[in-house]
Length: 266
Image (tube, rainbow, N blue to C red):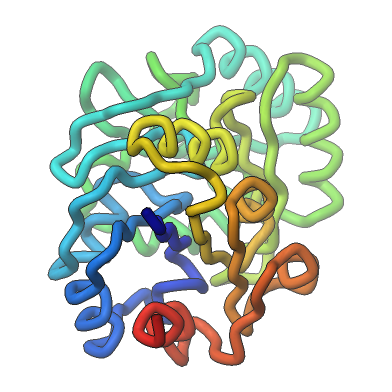
C-alpha cells in the first residue's frame, strides 16, 4: 500500500497559507492514504485544512505528536517541565532571550509567550490574535507536557543558545530560516520528538513499510523524514540542502501546487 505524507508550510500550502481549489480537489479525490507532517499544532493545522478530507493520523508539532483527524492523541513525546524550566532560566540569564512554548496542560493545548517579546516574536504573534490557546506569561515556565520550545532571532545567537541548551539536557533541536520573516527559529523537542521518529511510529500505527511511503517537504525539519521514507520529494522552492537529499525535485513550487500536481499525475 502506497502512503503519502506532506509537509504544509511552503510545501502543500501556498505562501499565503491558502489551499487552492485545484489542490483541494486533488486531495479530496485522492484514493490512497494521504496525510500531513507539520510543525503546526492540531488546531492550527486543521484550521488551515478546513474543507479537506482528513482520514489518516497526522504528524504534528514537528513530530512531537501524532493525532487522528478528530483530535485523539495516538502518540506523544514531551519535554519534562523540570528540564524546560532549567534551560529557560539559564538562557534568559545569559542571553536575555525567552522562548515560545507549545504544549498540553491536561488535555488543553496552550501556546505560551513571554510578556517581554523580541521584534520577531511580536511579528509572529500578529497571526494569533483572538486565539484562546495563546497566553502571555509574566514569569515564563514550562507546561505539564512541553511539545516544542521555540526561540526566534539571529542565526548566530540561536546557534549559541542551541549549544548551551545541549550542554544542559538531552534534546532534539532544529535551526531553520523562518519562511515568513527575516529571522531564524530554533526549536527544541523531545529526543524522539522529530518528524523522522514520528514517521517510524506512524508506520507502525498504520501497518505500512517505510519503502512504501512517499514524503514531501521543503525545509530542514523534513530532512530526517526524507532519509527514512522510501521516496522523498522536494518542491521547487525547497532549500538547496533539502533538494540534495530528495529522490525527486519537482519543477513546480508550493505556489504552483507542486505537490497537488504530483499526486494528480499518479
